[in-house]
Image (cartoon, rainbow, N blue to C red; front, top):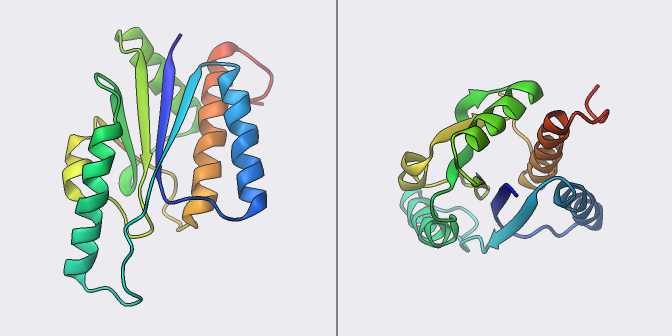
Length: 160
């Protein structure tokens, strides 16, 4: 069975986000093997300098590298990435499956972003929108889109 791994930096705190994430994770597990890995966000001062931000992102990057499944197709969510429709994301995941990969890994970084080292390791850079979203909401949106992509491939009526 194909495995999707979602790596996120930082924990959800609000109950409504936690509930939504649990629902989509449960749904995904009905269509694929799903793993969610949470990395602790680096603690930075209230007004961090660019050097402090870079050091924090590098520290997070070290932890991220340890969690990416070996041999996985790796996608980072970043504003400079390519935007895809839900159907195109489903096609992209189907292509990964056909290529012989048994795992796709998606990464949502911290509120300060993702280190360039990690971006350079990505097989694909995906942007959700030119708009800015809270990271907690972005996590729910990614989970929903992964569920939608798997539903499209399964031929379910979820995607209309």
